[in-house]
Image 1 (cartoon, rainbow, N blue to C red):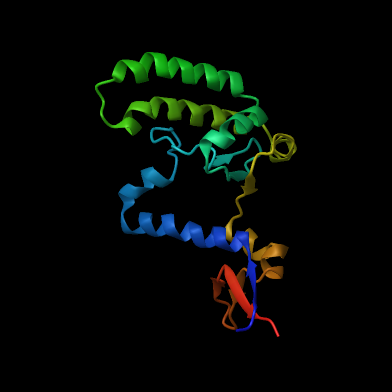
Image 2 (cartoon, rainbow, N blue to C red; image 1 turned 30 degrees about the horizontal axis):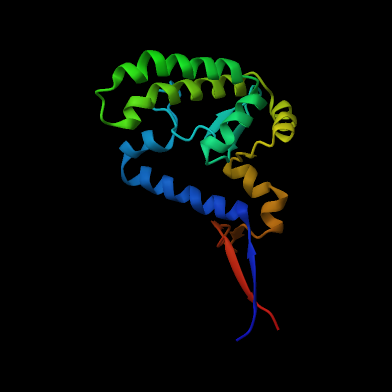
Length: 185
């Protein structure tokens, strides 16, 4: 057979992956609490280093650290909230998690810990501009991406260079496939 070149665009894959939670919420509104952090943080993200937060200057940022254990320390260090976060985690464990040993559902039992982590990460974001976050994230090796609005994504130069979107002759915009296969001669 012929060899193939595989071109993968992570930004396109991200757009496709976002369709999964949107479809879940579209089919069942109760799923929203699992996917999005409530602004009051009543439904904490159990992956706080893989969630969206708003910076001081209003830029939304998606943290890309899916493995909380691997990414939490560097994220809270970059945000300057590590000691408050650690202290709060200890307090939540001692006052709410350990005394609640009768709760069989582990997610419910540790919920106060994740509420606290999300609270301090959110606070850290609200204390820094996007420019400040970029510098700190680079220094601490935090994985992130700015969240683009649909209109800014359409106007984003890299979107067109990587063929992420397709605009038909009638002006209809659609997301292109995240993976393209090309036969090599």
